[in-house]
Length: 307
Image 1 (spheres, one colour):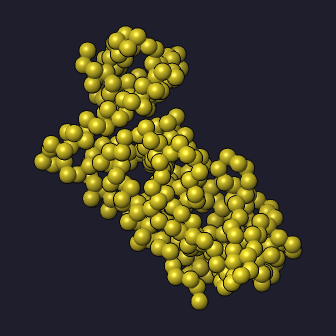
Image 2 (cartoon, helix red, strand yellow):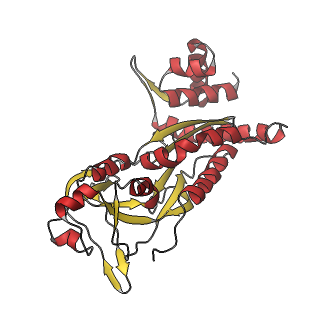
Image 3 (tube, helix red, strand yellow):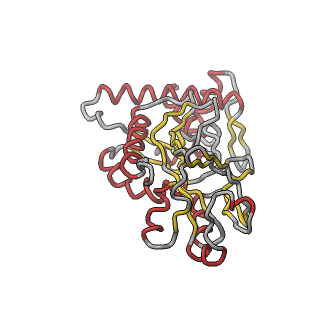
C-alpha cells in the first residue's frame, strides 16, 4: 500500500461523501479507492468511515485523522511546489465560503483577474451569510464581516467596511423621513431586520454625533439572514437599512436608496478571513487571503468622514 495514495483516497471520500465520486476525481476505479481505504483502516486498526448503501460518513476517529491528513497533504504539495521551477504559482483546490453581497458585488466580478494570476488554483465557492462549520463542511476558510468571536478560529483582519443608514424613496414617501435615529425606536418607522448567525437576533449598530450616542434597534416587519435578500427588502420599501457603503453605492447613484442621518457616524465593520488552526496555511490559502485584502482596499475602502 502506498500510504500517500491511501491518505489521498481517504480525504477525497470524506470530501465527496462517496467512494464513486472520490474515484471519479482521482481518475481511478471505485474498487481501487475502496481497497486503499480498507488497507489504511487495517494499518491504523481504526474504523475511519461509516458506510451504508446510501451514504458514507466519517467517524470521530476519522474526522481527527482527516484533519491531520489535510496538513500532511498540504505540506507535501507545498514541498513539491517549492522545488518546481513552475511553482511560483500556488496550485490546488481551495474551499471558501463568503457573504452573498460580497460575492455578488466584489469577489465574483474580480475572479477572472484572480484566475489570470493564479491559474492553478481551483476555487470551490460557497456563498452564504450563515455560520459555517469549517471542519464538518470541509471548508478551508470563510470571509466574514463583524468581529470574529469564535476563539477556535484563526482570523486575519483584511479590511474595514464603512457603514451607512439608507431607505428607499418609496418608503420615505409613505412613512416620512426620520430626522433622528431615535425615531426608529419610538415612532411608526420600521427597519428591515438582519438575523446574525445562529442567535436569531437582529443586528443594530451604535451611532454617535459629537457626544451624543444612540443604539437604535427599531421594529421590523421582516427579518432575513441573507445579505442580498436583506438589500432587496430595503429596495422594496419594507424599512430602513444599515448597509456597508459598497453595497449601497450603485443604488444611491440610481436614486433607489437615500442616505439617512449623514451627520451621524458609525464604527466601520471589520472584515476578516478565518480558518481553523488545524488547517494547513498553504501557498494557495495565503495567496487567496492576500488577494481578498487587495480587493477590499480597492473596492470597499473606508471613506473619510462625511462632511
